Amino acid sequence: VFLLVIIGLIILYSTSAYNGQVKFHDRFYYLKKQAFATALGLALMFFMANIDYHIWQKFAVPAYITALLLSVAVLIVGDEYNGSKRWLSFGPLSFQPSEFAKIAVILFLACVITKNVRKMKKMRYLLFVMLLILPIVGLVGASNLSTAIIILGIGAVLVFVASPKYAQFVWLCVSGAGFMGIFLALESYRLERLAIWRNPEAYEKGFQTIQGLYAIGSGGIFGKGLGSSLQKLGFVPEAQNDMIFSIICEETGLAGSWFLIFLFALLIWRLMVIATHARDLCGELLAVGIMGHIAMQVILNIAVVTNTIPNTGITLPFVSYGGTSVL
Image (cartoon, rainbow, N blue to C red):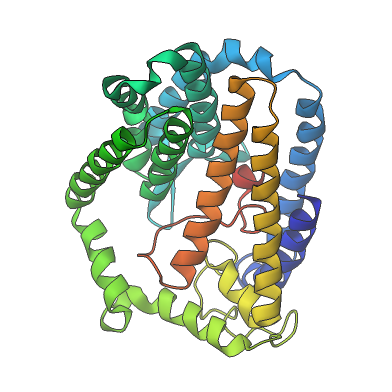
C-alpha cells in the first residue's frame, strides 16, 4: 500500500502538472489536494487498524441507510462536474458518497450473510441478499454507472464465497446480466458507449480512447521517461483521472506498467491470504469484499484504458486523482 501510494503521488504530479498550471496557475494543485487526502487516509488507516472489526457489525445497517440517504442527496442537491452529478459539498470540502457506499455495502452484506449463513444454500435467499443492495445500485447507477457495477460485483463476490453450491450462482449471474442489460437499455448514451468501444474512430467521443491508446503504444518497453509524456499535454482529457494508466505506460513503458500491475496483484493476493486466515466468517467476508472491490477497480480501469471494454469512469486505486477514492 505504501509503495502504491508513493508511486501514485509521483505519477499524479507528473501527469497533472500541465493541467494544474493551465487551469489553476499552480503545477502542484492536484498533488497538494491528493497529498492531503492521502495523509488523512494513512492516519485513519492506523487508527482503524487498532479497532476490533466486530464493533463495526453494530453499524452495518445504519451505514447502509446512510449510504442510501447520501445517494438520494446527490440526485437532489449534488454538484455536477464534467457532466456528472456525483459530489456533495460541505463548505470548501466535497466528497463522493458512492465511495462510502462501496464500504457500507461490504460491511452490510458481510453481517447479513454471517447471521444467515445456513440459508445461503437456498437459491431464493441468494436472490434476497442481492435484492437488498439493488436500491443502492439503482440510486448510485443513476449518476455513476461504473460504481453501480462495482457495488453489484462486490455483492456477487460475497454471495459466491458464502454459497456452498455453484450451480445456483450461475443462475444468479444470468439474472444479474439480464438486470444490467435492462439498465443499459434505459439510457441511449449507455448503448452509444458500446458503439464507441467497437469503433472509436467513428465517433467524436472516441477521442479520449484513441489518445490513450497512442500514449500506451508510444511508451515502448521502458517508456519515454518520467515527466516526458506528450499525450498528457491536453491530448488525453483529464489525464490525471481515469486515464492515468495510459500516461504510466507512455512514461515508464511496458516495464513500469507491469511493475504497477505486480504491486496490485501482490496486494490482492495478501487480501486473499488475510481472508483465508480470518478468525471467523465475518472477518473473512470483510476481507473478501475489500479484495473484490480493489480487484474489480484495477481490472476495469486497465481494461477501459486499453479499450478492452467500453469506457466507464473508474479510478485506478491509490493512483488516480480523487480525494474520496484514496481516502
